[in-house]
Amino acid sequence: MKRLILFVITLLALLSTSIKAQDYNKPFQFGLMVAPSLGWLSPDVDNYKNDGVHAGFAWGFVSDIAISSNYFLTTGFNVQYFNGKMNYPTTIIKEGTSDTYSGTLYRTYHLRYLEIPLMLKMKTLALKPYRLFADIGFGLGFNLKAKADDSFLINDSPTGNNIVSSNTSISNEVTTARLSFKIGGGMDFPLDGSTYLFTAIHLNSGLTDILSGKNAKTSVEESASPSWLSLTLGIMF
Image (cartoon, rainbow, N blue to C red; front, side, top):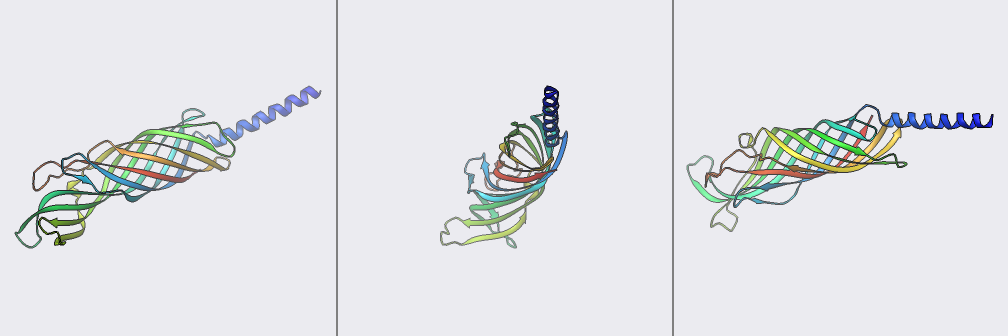
């Protein structure tokens, strides 16, 4: 009798653990995320120079589709606000005149993308009270808006005789789509049942050129890829 009672208690404990695991790993989960980021541009043209790291931001929806107890397909969509800066030699025609100036353009890019990630997520077994994970995959982004703030320094004018313009549309100088490689890792923090908070660090490295214009001075086709490092915070239901 004692053995039977012990067996029943053990069985109930195993079932309880199984139910909790199933709650934590539903076949499909949906959630929300935000991700502040630091981004930069990597030019692939002579005399084009990256001009530092700039802050950005993203928000969106994420879903995990269970492949097995520890492997998931992660997808969804997010809206990414990317900021980056380059400088390069070129020529411009001053607005309202026919005067052509040669100099260096300092351009800050403000780009907005709708990105669809497709990633493989690998999770550890639950390590109370959290769970570690790593994910790797790709992101396909579609340009929604492209603006630029420009400061053009005229040659032989070191005193600051420059031409400034802001919020200029450059949609015709940016490609429609971009592809990136994504890798990262983080932690899950369970709240109740299948609901949990998560945080992660991701590198989003550009694989394709996003510029489609030509340099007005040299007629060289412009080329650069954007990348960013982000801190993701979110909740899954």
